Amino acid sequence: MEYNDTLSHFYELRTRCIRILAGLLLAALVTLPFANQLHQFFVSPLLSQLPASGKMIATSVTSPFFIPLKIALYMAFVLSLPNTLYQLWKFIQPGLYPKEKLVGVIGVLASLSLFILGASFAFYVVIPVVFKFIIGSAPVGVAVMTEIGNYLDFLISITLAFGVAFQTPIIVVAISCMGMVELKTLKESRGYVIVGAFVIGAIFTPPDIISQFMLAIPLWFLYELGLLVASVFFHKRNPTETASLTAS
Image (tube, rainbow, N blue to C red; front, side, top):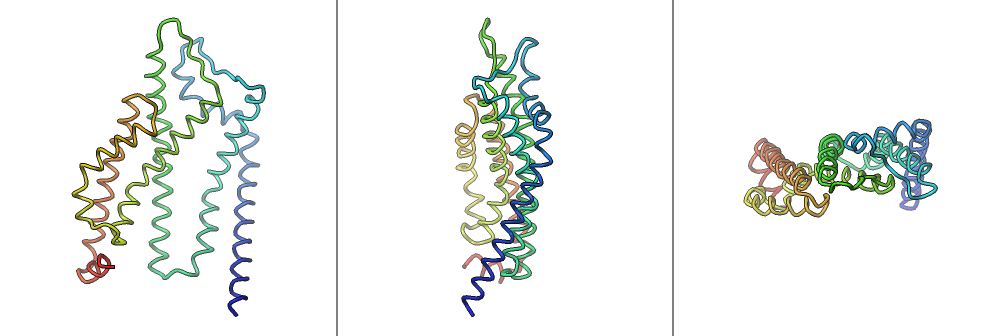
């Protein structure tokens, strides 16, 4: 009986993985024909800050072909992400209680929304400001021409850093509600969080004070948002439930 259950779980996992790959392939078929247009869109924050004679360069023979292709594949992954999350959810859903299912759905939707918000903030606000500062700081006579592969790596690292940083409210609410750290302790740790936010900003952003502040300050506010949501969540619980949750 146990062997049959394990086998059925394996077949279910295989089915979900096939559907995830099928969704990714379908999304790739949608994005690949628009690879050049997507490339033009994602390099626009840099091109808009370059002088009239400024251009991007390709130092590798294959870069003009592979960089737009990589961007299209990245966008296919993002486009297929709802399907991926849905398939994963359908795999773990049978083992959850009704309350856990509701919390899981809310958590996934909130996490995905915050990630998109963080990545969009990085793309539309942070990156143009950073490039404007860097290009404006170039000495007279220095032509700023960025290699497209390096730019893509920079773009991905910045958007990922901000997308992950914007998960802070989810993390704060999760660790407080699971009783890993008391809410009172989290509130008393604000000073350490502020210092840590600026350290994270210094590590995951370019070496300029503007981008560091543009990551550290939202990170701090998101921490405060997580504390607020956790406080509301605990306030709605009855004292017995809160005490038992914290004790566990």
